Structure formats: structure tokens, C-alpha cells
Image (cartoon, rainbow, N blue to C red; front, side, top):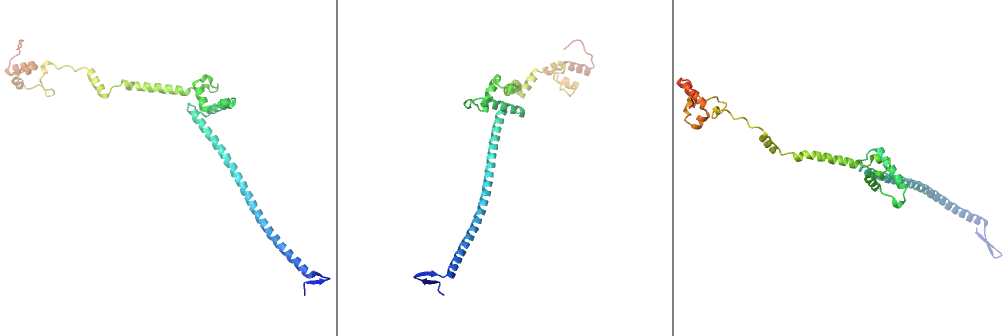
Length: 236
């Protein structure tokens, strides 16, 4: 059966053929629509996933910025505490008072007149009268501590300067010790710790003038004892 007919010179398409054409076109559009919807759903899923990741990125970025701020604050506090401790201030309460006084004074100045904490502390340490009243009892402690340490070091070094070497001390102690008394003349020339020599030994050595001079009394006693005589008042 022909799909077209001609009437009065005009070509017409059969209704059954038109219905088929319409059905085929609807089917094509339906297929495209289904494909498009599937792609749209996939894109929506990707968009949702990307949005979640973007939210996570934003959250992480916010956390990083917060941590950076905390790190900056911690570094600033560490630098402040290091500067404050250089002036002998280690108590937490006094340190907080220093920071409070410094922030209060700097906030009352114009930006061009503000000072670093180290310069401000140096100025009030050199001129304690200019320090805030809350800090005056604690300003200048480092200088006092250093002066006391220097005085202690000087006192400790003085005995060392006046102290002589051990060898010289020994020599001086020996020179200051009085000499022992000389033994009696009658015992000179006699060996100590061995007793008085025998009479024969004394008499045999009596011809030695030095020995005789040193042992004169003992020689006389030995002579009289050997000869059975008594001593006379005369000396020889």
C-alpha cells in the first residue's frame, strides 16, 4: 500500500503513515529526554559532591586561619614572656601585670609613639620613677640582683687573691715555727736513741778535741769510774 496519494495535483500522506512518523519522533524525543535526565541526575550528584567538598574546604580553611591566629598569638606571648623574664620577672601574676600595664599605656598613645615591649621595659627599668605604680615594687630587681651577685663574686675572689700557694704556706709556717732548743753540751756528739757510749769508747775517743768538748762530763765520769777514783773539784 502506498504511503502517499495524489489528489488534484496535491500529494497527501496516508494517516497511518503520519501516525507512524509521529510515534517514531516521540520515541526519539523520549529517548533523548531520558538520556538527558540521567545526565542531569549525574551532574546533580557531582554538584552535590562538589558542594560538600567545597564546604569541607571552607571549613578546613577556616580552621587553618584560626590556627594561624592562635600561633601568632602564642608566638607573641612567648616573645613577650622572654623579654619580661630578662628583667628578673618570672612570677605569672607580675608578668600579667606587666603586659596589662604595657597594653594600657600603648593603647593610650598614637601609633607613631608606640614602643616595643623591650624598649618600654628598658626605659622604666632605667627610670623606675616613670614606671606604672603597680610595677614599681618589681622594677630594678635585675640590677639589684646583678649588684649582689657581683659583690658576692668580689668577696669570693678576695681570699683567693690573698691566698699563697701551698708550698709558700708550708715554708712560711716552717719559718714561723720556733726552733727546738739545743741539747745540753754534755750530750753533743753522742748518738741519740742508742744510749751513752761505753766508758772504754768514751776514753778511747777522748783524744779527739771535738768529741772531748762535746762529751767532757761523760769522759770524766768514765775515767774516775774505770780507775776507782773520786771526782775532784778541779776540771781538766
